[in-house]
Length: 600
Image: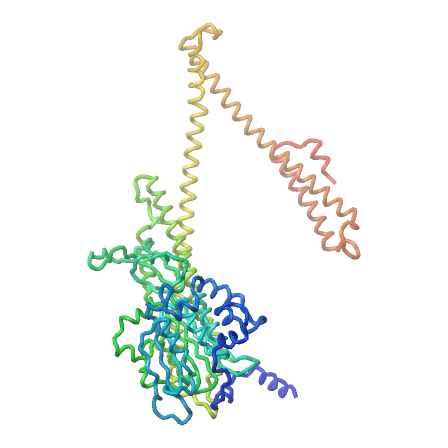
């Protein structure tokens, strides 16, 4: 009986590709969501209508990120080709093809003049997707956008259908917010759709010039972080003028790749690909032949020989892109390992002092300490990005994870190549895990080096303080009496009650030295006694508080009075403090009535 209950409970959490996706389904929402809302005069602008399915499903994160990103741009700019990039920047690639269960070839494709501007993309997506008089159905649609701009967001938002909108909102948000996700999402209610998420953030090491700051309020691309690494001296040798570009420095550029495949069945689906230009370069630099390849898959799939299954396609894109990510991490960590090792070897402060001038040595150690702190902060950031990606994959492939959606079912088999792709993906992540281990070792090396520098800086500070103390003692005890004696002898003769002779000057200096020494000795003795009095007062106050609590248990709001464990603690605390107080008094030779009065 117990086994049956457990088996039934596991069925609730079983992840399996729905049978509903294995048959061609009739769609009832071919019209764009924004157009539907405009017909009923819904509140908000065009972007606001896209962001809200209803008042109850609006994500505050998505609202804030997308509204901030798309400020100063409107759908009117996209339609008319206005704004900073809508009608000028060719950063979109589109592939639309027919797809049916009985199709045996690649499917008829709609003609598109790739690459497209945001305005061109809007016009292409605005055409009737199914049942067009002159064009084949766009059942399988791939949309690739390089450096996602607000104009492209509007083009996508204004043409997305009801069932596409949630996945598209999620894809745009994750790409703009530099999030990682490897997951499958199927809604628990409403029209049944699938959403295959692949969002991978990473960092690219290269020589580049600092990015130009935007001049206007309108954004033209996602806001990515750029980090100058010139402080690490990544060059193993001095670069030639030909190799070194004007103003170029070693830097790390945040980069993000997003691929979201969403649809209603095995034949009607849309693949969104958002990529930063630092990863793929510019579409305008590609030849016509290059544009004939799938850009989402980094030109790893011939567009004329498409993968028709959404799961098989997503897996292949995953395999291709994660290998590029792995290579970028390999190069970044290789260069950092070498640079950090060389920097530590170049500044061996654990060896005997190699600088003749101590001030230069201290300045060099402070500079090395500052560089080490910057490096530690950089390594923490890298580790956070890499570990997040690895954790997403670990959760995806874990028992009961979303990888179960990719198991074959009778009506929808996973092709053998897709299974091989998963093996390749796992191998790439195993290499990424090795890179993560290297990052952890680098963090520890920098931490140990920083601790060593901190110790040496503290020793330098102590030596300086000791030197200053000796100098101060000499000035106060020796030079000050002579200076004071000289000041006295410079007074008028009538004001001095003795003759101004060398003998009297020597006696005056000797007397002043004795007075200064006696004053300093008395001050030290007074400070010791003052500290003793402070300890005695604190001890008395603590004892009175403990005694007051012990004699008045009703003041503590505990049922049944003070627990025995707390009462024993009070008694031990009183005995310990009395013994410490008496010991402190005996060490200084001062035991008077005030101390005896503290005895129980």
